[in-house]
Length: 339
Image 1 (cartoon, rainbow, N blue to C red):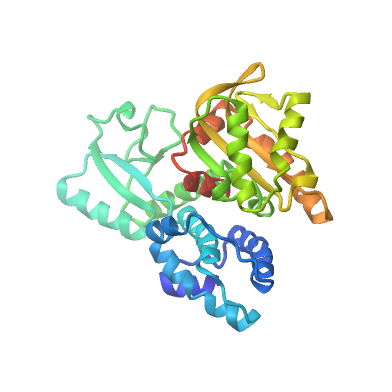
Image 2: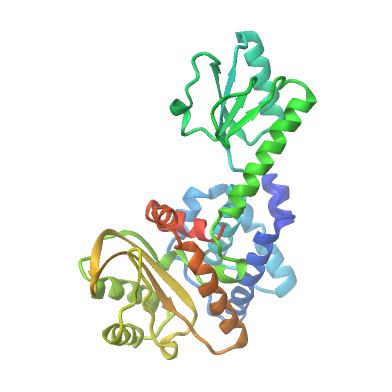
């Protein structure tokens, strides 16, 4: 599949172990659904076809592989889910950097340097040139990289000093700096491993959700799962029964409610980022994770245990919670979780 995507879109993901593992885990139940006539409907398919049309068109070529290897015809709904994994991997690979170059180059030298950097380091999307005397670091807080031809007094991890950017040593220094930044991005990425990705679905993610009570919030989230047959009609009642016995708030404005495993057909995690905080028992809550977990097999139990272990890292700071709250759509939050 990844070779097909590479040949059509000229984006090589064949060495991306994370997308490989996540696709393998996702495709096992996909093949089962297709084989036994229960394909999954994708409520976001129109959005996916519009926003990620190139990846969607390329992914249609994958349908040939399903016919060749499994004798199955894949639906556009199922293709849509695959597109989201591939799109997230492409965006992870093609992160673009904004750069400011601090120097005293003349206009001709500036253009030469710009062309050299763009050709040698394609991840750099924008380059702004500023003279050494005019540069004030406070004016460039939204830039990713600061290249300076001279040592600077500021202590900023974005700064890389390269006296001569035009020679091979200069480009090599910039490349190393960029690789270090990429490594830091990977370390700061969401903590979930590909095995947990299958627990998330865009249909069960709500951003800017406007509700007034926890009952209203949990009803909306439970109904979304029930409509997709992920849970049974008893799930909401089991969630509320648990709520009546003990609080599910865990601090920092986060709640972690869950229902009975006997009312769950397929393990999923619902997420709601509320437009405004609401009272949840005796605490203000704005971020809700609704857990619908089955514990029928060893693999399911292992996946749930891994989720709990990795989930702690997702919400362990105000900065990370603000990142979640800043997500503008369910697709954006979903891609963040599976990156």
